[in-house]
Image (tube, rainbow, N blue to C red; front, side):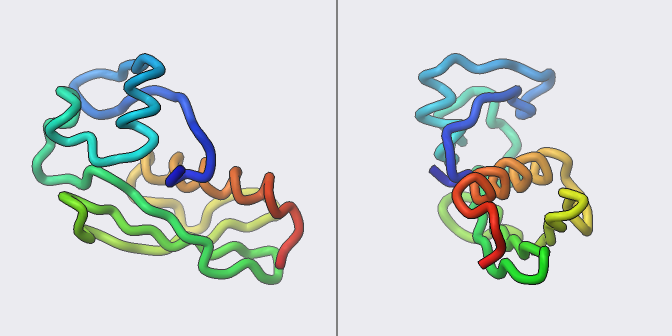
Length: 117
């Protein structure tokens, strides 16, 4: 799973928030690349999948690198840092959906590795 676990939530693609059914979440939302397969993914100028990587976990700071993909190619990339104490991202992502996905990813990581490497 790209976010480390299977996640449910509110879809922010499209004109208004929407809660997708289990099949949609499993096949499209959690895996990415829903453009052309999901009628809510209409924005041609945005990415259609996000991939995260724990680049470093040291001294109470977890560095998370991400790549937003479009049509299976890198579209935009960046890095965030998660402070184990107080449990927050710095700097905050410019995109609140990306920020929430990064928090979900680091949450999955912390369940598997609660202590710094």
